[in-house]
Length: 158
Length: 158
DNA sequence: AGTGAAATCAGGCCAAT
DNA sequence: ATTGGCCTGATTTCACT
Image (cartoon, rainbow over all chains, first blue to last red; front, side):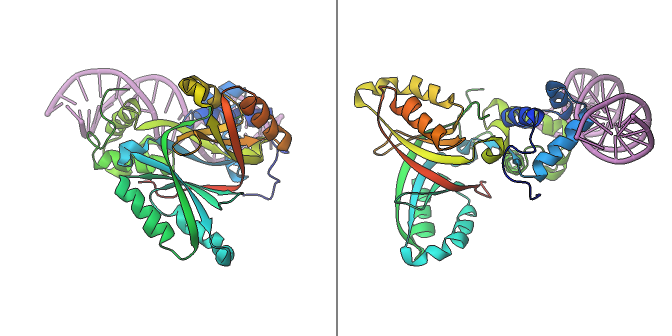
C-alpha cells in the first residue's frame, strides 16, 4: 500500500482495462489478460502486482451463493448507534465484520449509522444476530430489518 | 447449472472448505487448494468445476476500489416502485443492473422495493443517476439516498 | 516501464481403480 | 468419485532495453 492518491492519477488505459477484465473474471489467467490488453505477460504481472499494492484491487474473491453454505435467509439491517457511544463506532464496526453472518458493512449518512448485509441459516439465526449481537449490546439505539428476496451484482462497473 | 436443490445436500466438508478458501482468496491456485483440503489436484479441479456448475460459486471477481476507477462517491439508494407498475419490476431491475454506476441490486421487503449500491464519479453523476435513470422513469414512486462513508466486507462468511 | 528467453510450476485430459 | 501420470501451457524471474 503506497501513499499514491486514490484517484485516476497513475492509472492509464491499460490499468483500467485490466481492472475491468478482472472485475468480470477474477480468475482469468495472466497471459490471457496480457493478450487482451496488448502487453507482455511479464509486464502484466508487474502491473497487477502494483494494482494490488496501491489498493486499486483490494482482493480476489469467489462469489459464493449463501444458500449453498447453509445461509439461505438474507437481510439488510439498518443500525442506529446511541449518541452517547458515537466514539466507539470504529471498534464496534470492526467487531461487526467478524460476525459470521455479516457479509458487508456500509457506514451511511441518514437516520441510521450503518447497514449490515447478513446471511443467516434460518429466522432463528437471524433473530439471534439482531437481538444478541446487535440490540444486546448497549451501544445500539435501534435496528430495522429488511428481508432480501434477491441480490444481483451490477454488470459493468467501469 | 443443474437442478440440484440449493442447500447443503450434495456438499461435503471438503466442498465447504474449498468455498471458504476461495471466498478469501479467489486466485488461490488449484494445487494449493488441493493440498489445503487434502485431495489430489485433479480431484480438486473437478470439484471446483462442479461447484460452479451447480451455482454454489457464482463467479470470481476482483474487488476493485471504486475510488480508483473514478467513482469515489458511493451511495445506497432505496427505491419504491409505483404500485401500478409492480408487474414491470422484473424487467426494470434487469435494466438497473446495467447502469454503470450500479454495483449491487437488493430486492427487499419493507416500504421500499429495492436498494441500489451505486458508485458515482461525483455528486453531479450521482444526481444524474437518481433523477434521470431512476426518478426520470415513470415506474418509480420515490427514492431515498444515503451516502456511504465506508464499505467493508465481512470476514468469515462460512 | 516494457520485454523475451528460460526454468519452474500449475492446469487439465485420460486410463485405471 | 478419486487418483497418478503425463503433456501442455501458464507463471515468474532476470538480464537487457
